[in-house]
Image (tube, rainbow, N blue to C red):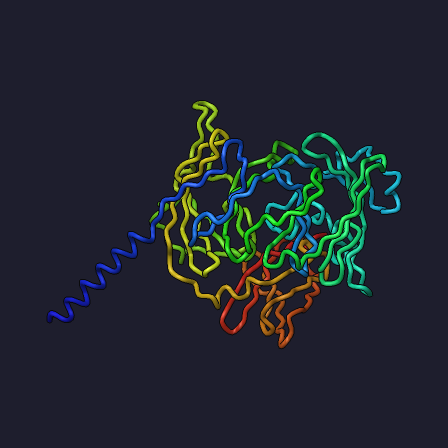
Length: 413
């Protein structure tokens, strides 16, 4: 080997060694005692923003093709449907409302508690889509039980065409202290949600820009099978941002698994979730699940492997994990993540909005068999009629010339 070639080889080896040393990073974040704060985290940039977990009650979507409204279940807020007829506003009946409690979806930010009971377009849970005005108008009345135990009734009067503005009303159950609030989505451009605090009567801009974060550590409600019934428990976990794809890897050595062996998709915001830890009732200590890691895409298009190493519980809110930086998946591969698919679940028509104007759509069953294909040219919006397919779980695969993305869709009965 000549000197020049040997020099290049040594440089390559030192560069590779430096990259490996840089790729693995040990991280500690702290939510504080009793999980007092939400932490927005970037895999590339670290902790982006910390916000008090209890400073909001309702969160309203920013996305134009979305009608999602979240409730702060981690704070103790509860929501119930009390009427499917908005003319009952002045004489609501709260009997039996406990059987109509609502929860935020743990799979999608698009299905907040007040929206996730919608059966299909044009029913969006809290409201009904008007095909003439293109507004979503009030359809149901809700009762909120606040974290202090008091109650308010709530109606979402309207989301205007293309989702530019929300108007809603709040009042005591007897009708006293009624207020009407209006908020414009464009005041919060670049975010996923804007927030409202009922006690303070205040709108909040509490999120970082959506393009800046990958994970949020927060408390949320998780449905858990308890014998013959499903109960909802408040857990602490990590949820991923819109468009972030992930895979859960169990049974592999965390720092030796290869992302090429796993399919990364964005069908479930709680893929990381809360079950990387468990409480040992014998030792009264938290344990980390053995041989469990996650592959997660970042806003910059790079794949990271993440595995947890420690958890302090509610006493400290400390979370320890390591992350390994993998290879870039490329910006083009991420391009189709900026889409909206609604309503989901659906009973028929599925609306699809994409930032890319020419792409191919395919409907696949759970085994990957293609059931339906459609080419879309020079338009950002299209529809699929899924009414002929049996109820169940399917995948929508979207391809452009340089990108591909997969999204789970539920066809309801």
